[in-house]
Structure formats: structure tokens, C-alpha cells
Image (cartoon, rainbow, N blue to C red; front, side):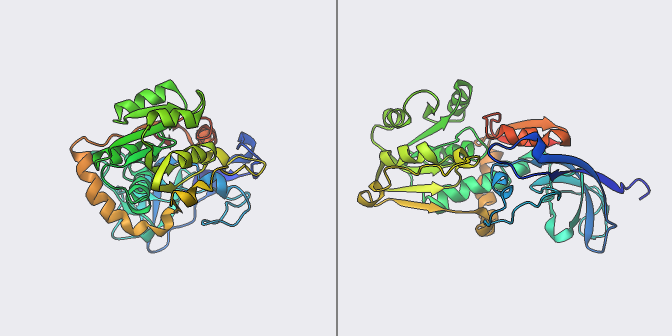
Length: 336
């Protein structure tokens, strides 16, 4: 193809953040695209994801995924169109998801590109409700948290990409009561629109007292996206044999000093609590089960999702920073 690009723009990690990520930690640069080899496709990215977990990868520390490297492009979930192909199963024009975001074009091995149908739900849905956030919500609620019909469920970060889906899935599966925490009146109003029974503004008064008021009979399952004071409040409110799904701890990702742990962990003994963490790399096999259960909800208009969209690769670092200041409702994406 004569019009196939030979260069692209990409965001590289210029330096490792100390505390909150800043613009100077990133650099926009132009890079040569390698020639396609057999079994590869060239994808023009249309929309890319920024996610809180990426903050941990900016530290030079061992974790469940390798750290980003200085002066190398970042990566993450993205959706795009195949514009050149040397893979028979992925002809030009195919829309795919891939993991080489933070760049406008990417050379992707065919087995790392998943064809998707964007005609009905759009491309950003595959970074949200039908992508990692949706699968994370499903896995954390039903497999890690062992949700049971009638449970009272508390979700932190409830207006975010994962939390907003957890609350809705719990209601659709027969929760007795679903409570969510968020950081603004507008987000609390959105939670009510999504079917949450109660909302807590964690910036407005004592969190533990607000949770007791919202759940006077206690909670059975806590889906933790925040950590810190939210986890402490939830431990205090959990009923005997309660469960905690440890999904994220966004309140601590930018900490420059070791954050204090919950001061009431001892209650986990007397209450016989289960606290269980998970990472999605170990549960990718659940995707077919997830889609089988979630797609009917979507088809019948029972499951809603929000997208906060920023435009332009150059604005991806700022969009990433907004994740830690409450700038997103639902999934944050960057359209390229």
C-alpha cells in the first residue's frame, strides 16, 4: 500500500514519577515503524485506554506486570483498524483490540490482535464494559467475592470504570442493597441513575459513620478499588463471614511514604472475614463466561456504562493524571 505510514507518534516514559504523575514524566516523539513480517498487522489506533494500574508500572519495582522502561513507549489497551496486513485472518479494514496503546500506529502480531464488531457498541466499549473493566468487575464480584443473592454490597470508586459496573451487576444478580462511594454530588447522582440504592460522598464527613447509616444491618461484600480509609470502614461494617474483593488501592498509588494500613484488621479474625486479592492476568480464561452473561444484559438495555473521552495522543498524559483527581466518570479513554 503506497499510503501505508512508515512513522508514527508515541508517548514514552521520560522519567519515573515521584508522587503524582506530571507532564515532564512523559515525552511525545516520532518513531520509525518496522516493516511487517508474516503474521503481523499494522493497526491505526482509534481509541486508547489509560488505567490506574499503569501508575505502578511507572515505578522500577517488581510486580505482576513488568515496569515501563525509561525512553521506551508505554503500552496498554487500545482499539484500532488494520491498515496493512500480512495475516490472512486479519484483512485490511478489520477492527481489533490490542495492547500497544500510547501510540498512533502499532505493528501487532496477529495472535495479539482480537477482532471486534464495533458497529453496534462503538470502539470504546471494548476498553470498558466489554473490555478489561467489565471482565474485572465480573470476576471480582462473582468469582473472587463469591456474590450471593441478597448480599448487601459496598463498592468504592463506584463511579469509575470498574465500580460502576460492579454495582449494576450486583443489582442485576439480586443484591439486597448496593452502596457506592464517590467524590462529588454529580457522581452520586449518577450512581442513583445506575440503580445504586445509596451513595456516600467520601469527601463529606466521616466515612465509617456514613457507611453505617447507609447500611444499618452491615455489609456482606466489599469491592475495594480504593484501599486506605475505605478498607478500614468496610472491615468495621462487614458482617460475620463477610468477603472483601481487593481489586485496587488508588488512594495509595501516588504515596511517597508508606501509607498506614487499616487499624482494625484484627476484626477480620472475630468476624471470620475473607480478604482476597486478584489480578486479571490469572483470570483471562473467564472471558467467554463473562460475555455469555453480560451480553444479554447489554442487549436488553439493563447495563449502562459511562465513558470520559479526551482527544489527541498529546493529551494522554493529562488524561492519565485525571484518574487520580476524579476527572473521570466511568472509563477514561483517549481518542486518537
